[in-house]
Length: 336
Image (cartoon, rainbow, N blue to C red; front, side, top):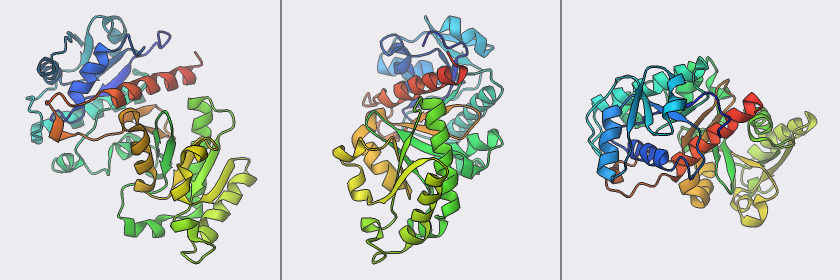
């Protein structure tokens, strides 16, 4: 990672969650995990208190510009900006939500302006942010809007050592899923996934497995016709366009060990169909990656975990992987 010129911007996430402590622990493991230089947008006091509570030795370097982070990173955790709040682990409040939003906004702008090599977002509490006027379903949609990208063209991919999955529909009620699935949406999402795996993950010919919606992939129409009328025609169109797409596959068998070696990513029809297998296999190393953006954005694939914040139970693996993956993607895009 030493070839990475621009540091990564890490947003603090909700200061009452586990993000501050896992960010600090990630910095302490920077050498052992070969992490690229990164800095945090705001929350110096929160980070200092979180490190002290966990017993981590984490000197902070308050910086005025992202460019200062690279030199400072070897001996201190760089923090940009003066925004802060009280550190109250497990007790989310309005001031913490405002700090989380300000940190996310700052990190997004720095990535969009190319002052940062990528953005890594700490977990937020969407319900807390909604109280202060945050109008997006999640951070994926917020970052897409910051880049002037339509929400449907910002594709969420969950990536771990054993599996990559993409939910076609994301934050909606299960009852709404059949009405939201369309051949056009499958084509758009799968095309973005194919391009991103080539560009950002170095896979020259991605293999894309596409799930069915219904049990047994509809079983020839006896358990639903979405596979016949929507999903199969979309797969045929993808193959005609030169994309190696297969399916519709029964989702109950696609994630078994012997099947996972037959594809590079699985596109699922709804949130839990994609996230359950990823979290079952790679919970501590799962990364949420947003594809289709002009910038790189990753995030640990876990939530705020208010229930264990400050207790010493939080594990940094997913944050470390999110930082590492963002750095690797940035290197590929710069051709280094």
